[in-house]
Image 1 (cartoon, rainbow, N blue to C red):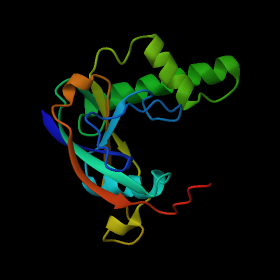
Image 2 (image 1 turned 180 degrees about the vertical axis):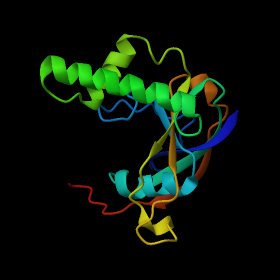
Image 3 (image 1 turned 90 degrees about the vertical axis):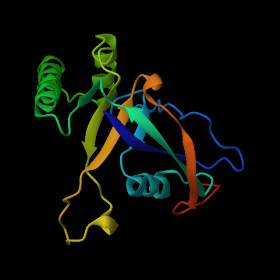
Image 4 (image 1 turned 90 degrees about the horizontal axis):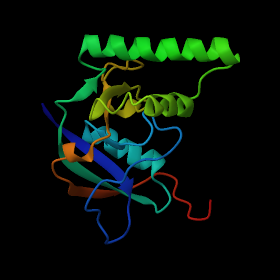
Length: 173
């Protein structure tokens, strides 16, 4: 199954990317991966609130082959396996070390055990704080869906869509 995805990056002036940049942050949901939003509004919101170093961000769009993805959003069996794996590991970690498992530790463990090697990526739901796109006050009825892509061959194209301004630009912060 193919999905359209939107990748957000800092604007680099006239230089446009030819390929998405892999996220390597410790706090990334699934560790090192190429991250895409399923909705362009979510990609724009992410650019406005998190891509502020240059005062602008770029959004690119791609067609992504999701046929071998762990789908924790729309596939109940995938969701239950994923949930069970995380909760078992978190409880084992807490009982053994007496502290909560961090996101980095979770992803390091999954990477070490090769659990992400069996899939090309993960479809997952993030909870949006962006109230602008909700038509009903205090009711988050829309899913904010992200794709974490481990196998970049699943990204079938990568096309520049637009540049917009981000919030609170301060070059010297």
